[in-house]
Amino acid sequence: MKIKAVLFDLGGTLVKTSSIPEVMKKILETYDIERSTEEIEQARKAADEHVDIEELPVLGDEFWVRWNTQILEHIGILKNVPFLAEKITKLWWHHANVELYPDAEKTLKSLKQSGLKVGLITNGLESDVREILPKVGLTEFFDVEVASNTVGKMKPNREMFLHALKKLEVLPQEALFIGDMLEQDYKGAKKSGLKALLIDRRGNIKDEDVEKIESLTNLLKYI
Image (cartoon, rainbow, N blue to C red; front, side):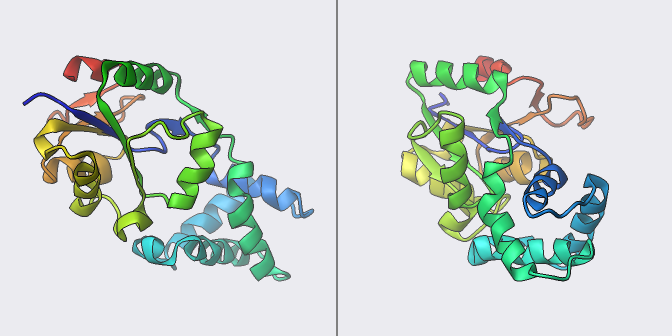
């Protein structure tokens, strides 16, 4: 069946950003707090054990405030923790150095010119999407944008994919989804009835059963 819509994951697929430790280090430095990226990364891993990512769609930005609080406590910050945790959340995208992958810009333009519907499905929040898209020149580019708090679920939950398809008025078999995460993106889309490609720019995925591409420009031959 002919492809009528192409949908994308956001982070790691269309855009790249600074790492979590790098961003947090920059923000903390604005408050005269010095910590290494190694310290922050270890604290991040510890924080991940104390929060449930599945709560993100329900809690929204409050989830990140709680997550930041855990990190701050693990790197030994004792003063003004609630204030800092909230500031890190609010300032995050001002320090994240967001940019489009070169292959993303070229591919998106080609898809738009071909008349295909183009959509976005991300496990980030709607607030993240509103921050990111203007930075990379994609405001009002997508025909549909689905974030985790749009439907209260996260990929690989099929509701994420089916909500986008309903908005686009296309059938699952008429849509192609591209993402960089094997379970959340590729398998989530396949189980929801969509065609799927895994973007694997560094060749890390060795599973021969996975249909993957090394550049987004390669997806054009699947249309």
